[in-house]
Length: 280
Ligand code: ATP
Ligand code: MG
Image 1: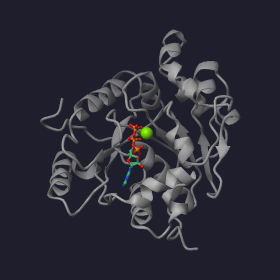
Image 2 (image 1 turned 90 degrees about the horizontal axis):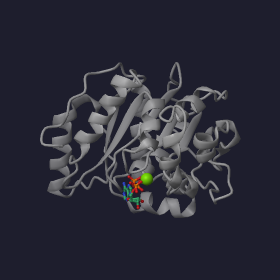
Image 3 (image 1 turned 135 degrees about the horizontal axis):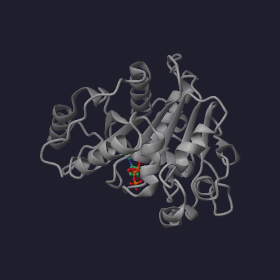
Image 4 (image 1 turned 60 degrees about the horizontal axis):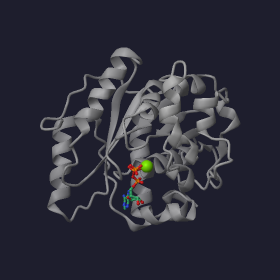
């Protein structure tokens, strides 16, 4: 089966990408797992860190994450090494996952009293000794301590934007948080990638939103849009990414193309960020 479309250049050093948007249901998890699988199918070694207590990324990758499974909670709160919780993903060589269990729901509060509470994840990733090309972190739909840990650990922020009305609302707050973390805790952090998700080319609204996002953000926006696709939404119920569930589908091909763009862009140099007008 010809899935990968050929190997892609591997980054000179590990690219740590934070998939964030505090708005719920915009495609963060779908983007995380499908980009990760696409990059792995192109020959990269990729780790997905599930940082959402809902554990959706773990489910989508077919990774067991019932309450007793060693998870990212143990890493953040109990200082367990990341290597103790990482599991290989079935069906996709080179793809790994640090699962989230429901315990993580308490971490936002438990971390408050922990030393260096914002940099727990960053320390854990730095101490991880296996070679990796990419780390993709799936954030919860909030800007709390879990997301801050991801922003401190990462260098690149990937923002999925759903092509719907109000798409840009609240983005200003996310961008300000990125600026705060960059200013105080992590100078490397920048928004590298914006991806339009659930794009329905038949509606005028989707193309208007897409145009607006491209006007505000410019070069960070990937040329590839992810179409609204039933196959993409079905795949998680089989514990699979769309890449293995239906390799030839439009959803699968669009994530492969988005991954190709990301890989070819390499590590984009830090750029000046700008707040989209009309957002708070
Ligand atoms: P949360 O904020 O709850 O973590 P999220 O931002 O991670 O949500 P997803 O879980 O990835 O969003 O997607 C929300 C819903 O939309 C899911 O049911 C998912 O299957 C569906 N979905 C995501 N992308 C697409 C797509 N391109 N086409 C169709 N359905 C999609
Ligand atoms: Mg999610």
